Image (tube, rainbow, N blue to C red; front, side, top):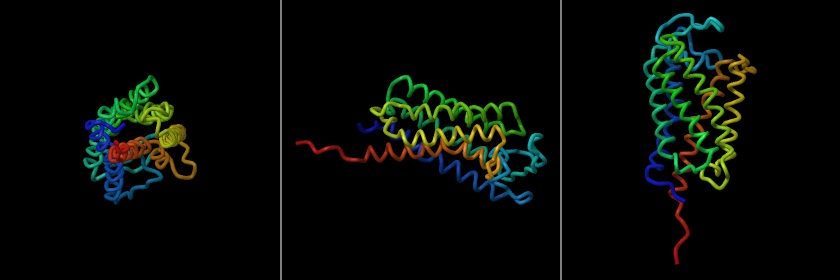
Length: 220
């Protein structure tokens, strides 16, 4: 069944989420000069820090992000796109306890993005950490649960993609919180945990729109 007009708008919002978030990471990182940004060492949150200086007592690192307004604005915009996608595709993805639970957990992850963007780590660490927990724990539980959606539902058609994204994200979260970089660096491991949600959303958005454009069987 082709998605409704509202679902197609939601899918379009999802498609924009990952490119926006990734582009903001890259552009903001490129503006770092003293120190240069390290994808292996620095966290995503470091890109949004307002002040320059040594940050984080558990893993001290020199942080100075000249384009932090861009990063924080992009995080808020990503939250808005992901939220719009979830709300507008809510019914189109299917029905049932598993799907509704997954959607609810992913909405909480979106709230995490909003908190992370609105409250940089060096402005309100508690709210920022709450946002990170919602993204890296709650959201990363929601993704593999979404992968258990019945195959007869729209969401269930993307089971392989959803389970892959969910398991990668969940493993990344466990390793990040354990401060284990596995040779990639702890900062890189955070990206393994944080990026799959938006990338998954963009891929599902593309699939939904592609399905909408696929002509149905000709009528006699």
